[in-house]
Image (cartoon, rainbow, N blue to C red; front, side, top):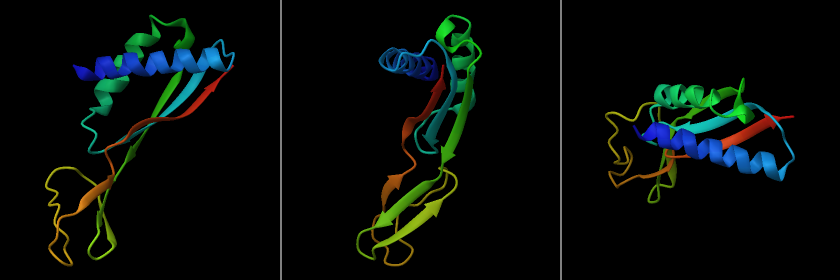
Length: 116
């Protein structure tokens, strides 16, 4: 389950951030995860919940996930196209039939950390 490894990496980043900012406790974390990132959000949240019991720094912390839709760009037409789901996407421009490039939707970021 790679979501477990991702959760551990997130906690490592939170530890470093807490140390750099003199935080004793993390109370809220907002994650942005693209729908094409390959991350199973429920599994990630489950893993983070399990780590709360092991790490006093994040005990009681709220983890919020913002799922980012998929955005593709055609460099021929110079148009952007949005997709809500990752299944069934055809990466061909509906205007000119040239390949599209994914420009959003693969990210996995910590966008906000609150603590005391």
